[in-house]
Length: 500
Image 1 (spheres, rainbow, N blue to C red):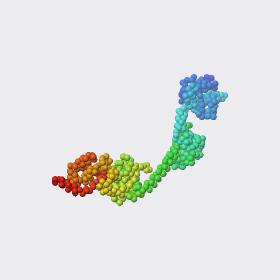
Image 2 (image 1 turned 120 degrees about the vertical axis):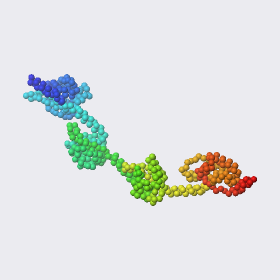
Image 3 (image 1 turned 90 degrees about the horizontal axis):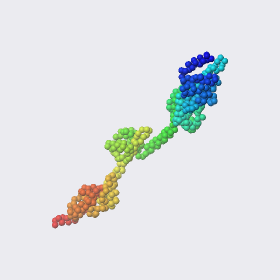
Image 4 (image 1 turned 90 degrees about the vertical axis):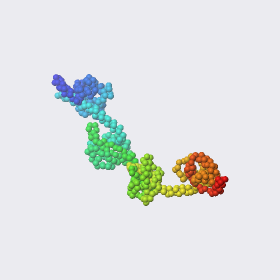
């Protein structure tokens, strides 16, 4: 007995300074010793709190296996020690019965010594705290499952899938049981990959697989276009694995197809448009592409590479640029451009900023309005000639003709023509013809004082104070000078009156 006591004392001295936890148990199920590491792994300071016997320990702590599931929950590690069973690397979850929130993860193994007759003489439970590792693995598992990005983990030793998240299942249409345990050859993640041979070499070597496009064969669709990448990782126990992540390309492919279709429609409309249309560079407004109508009138972009070559007036060009910069578009901008024959041409420009193939441009439509301008000028000249005698026209016709003569002029709120009396119209017509008061008096057979009174009333009615303003008022309404009628009899009477 003395030798046994000495041996146990020496054993305690050996294990006291160990970083692993050690619990010594007698064959009679008495816990005789636990070093500081073992006590810390159970959240207690002394052996009494741990339990003096195996039964007390089992009451104080609830233990569940995290591996060795085939053993069953009733086969407590201490029972296995007492039965003389040898085991190692059993991972258990330990909870305090009074405080279930206190949880530890222990990797345990045992040592059983026997006497000369083969009976157990000393039992030892060796503990290693692996809580941090399992907490990290739990966090990884939680993040892996919650990550919306599709992901799957393949074990490198046999290329079998060991984990898959919901994102991958949603992407492919597989069920979890269809994935776990299947091999890479059964579910090929690199089908149609851009660099498949290189990717397979990296997979077998456990190296990073760079991003590349691939086409998966999945039950959900005939083909699933994705971007796939592989990242080497170590799973619990240091097992080398490959983490595959994916990005769905379906939306991008649809967007690219729609963009191509849109660009084709634009190209056809651009080419077949009968209105001369040109694409200008966004900065210098240099022609880069033109339709056939533009090329026939102004030449090809290659022949008109200089933007200034199109414009005859640099001031108009700068004004066009300023309006485009300020509003992003220009409508009905009248300018004089130079066609390929070199002659000046009146044009109307409509332009808007556009983006084509990720590059900025200015889309500009050009209309030749030279003929329209000539027609307008001829019409205005004809109106000027006809309106020499405004007395032939009604009020509505006169105002419409005046508006046609000056379409952009400001609207002036003044007395209407029909509001004038016959005598006031006589005064208006002769003032516009440049006649003086004396001339008007002689022409109409009136005295100069009478003429001055009529002119004063005309000023008051028109809201003016001089003869030039009367002329402007009449011109704004399209009323020009009319030939003065022959008033020789009136002049004779005036001379007779002066002689008397």
